[in-house]
Length: 571
Image (cartoon, rainbow, N blue to C red):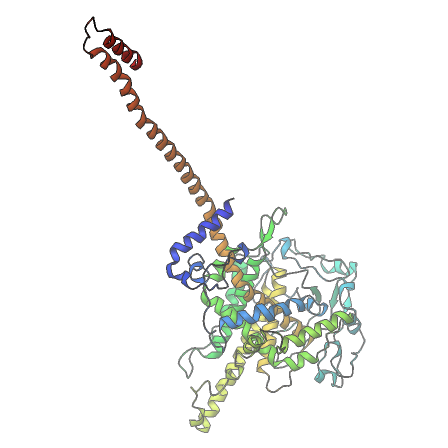
């Protein structure tokens, strides 16, 4: 009873506060659709929502927020969500036990259950991957050179080989962890999890992150280890983010006299990723005590609003990082279409390839949002990065040979610094105390690094490793979820505002109803009192008339009888 009343009263309040706003019955995305309300103008709902409204173009991009939302809701998000469910994209190789190279984290590791990562059992890993990674076996390549996750360039190499793997027995694992301290987080998973030794993604100058090349890499099922709230917070988490943002301290002395595009892009990518991570933590938040398992999972609207929603620049940066990734997706389309998504499951593999082709080529004539998707894929212009024109205010043609040489050298130095700082961030991920947070941090930094590698590679010869593609698509999918959820957060915020109003309004209605009843009762009593004096006067007047009537003569019996009759009647 309370909620329907709250809905009606909320609409009533909006009506009286809106005035001319209801003259245009357009309904924006942030409405109470989940409540069955069809008309709540955006201008009015904003009075109850703290989450910033996103209108107009995304800074540094040739795309606006409305177009991004339309393409995400109708095209990118559904495809990416399905891709994440396929066998190829749900398995990721990662090293989770590398020590922090910057500080001692022995007392900063998370000891809570939700921080632990559940490893893949051997029989859960794609069979074709295991065949390729057996020790001592050389790589097998199919005709087009893309089988087993290898690129054409790698397959044509004389000594091209694939990663190898070693399986640890139960006794081996026990020996490994014999001297582990008490705070060691024991991972979930049986003794047959796979450890991939001598596995490497290469270390060429085109690689933009510090990649794992040591022994100890393991397979993780991302669907079994979702990015969500783990309870990891406090000084340890703050220390990691502070170290990451300190990598953004570029030398601001430049020819343009201010922050250049490259520095701004670096900051916005990191800020956008952090905003997306915060969104996922708030999206799947645990309410209660996780130790005794007495709570439940659900969205934490207040957490999202406080960390992201009320900060317009964080929302803008999240959209920017998303468009940056979409541009890399478009540029890498030929490589992604030719890549082999083999896992040993023919049906699932063909489904993954079909989804990937639809994702990179949004040109289906029957899909209304395909046009919006194409605009988003061209939203960022990577040619402006590390360009000599960009560092000379567009007047490079007027420079002398020496000035042009110095400008090119400056752009090259900036690129080297940019790349070095990004690699450092990938190393900082090994300092994250929460194992599950470390997993998703390393994956998404690898995803951003892969996007940089794609966009910074000159020409069309882009060589991508299997793990890079898995990280890239999953990072893009996580960003799409965050962008997709912004309007949902606004709806939840409006719903929470109405719910908070429900109890006071219901009480006010009850008081109003009670006062109405009291007033009606008082009115009835007053009406009855107004009738009583007329009746009383009639009773008193009768006897008086009878007594004061003049005495009739004794002989006149008729008059006496009449007088008595009146007296009796009026008495």
